[in-house]
Length: 84
Image (cartoon, rainbow, N blue to C red; front, side, top):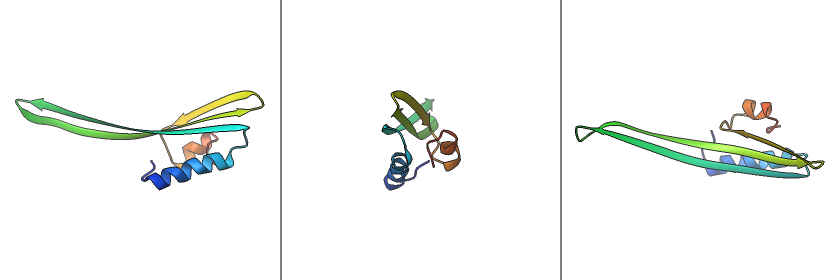
């Protein structure tokens, strides 16, 4: 997962740089969820989760392709032909 804004921007720039499509759209969305459960007026469970989602849409030769992932590691991105 990307750890900072600059790291995320590097990944997005790489995706755009290596795209050979006529048009490329890259979208990164971050979502944070938190949950606190109470029992007998006390905190019973407290948890938080942060996810970053990457979507890429390309247009080449009047055809549209789309891929998405939650992983920012090179290996899964290569499998999806997102990472060089």
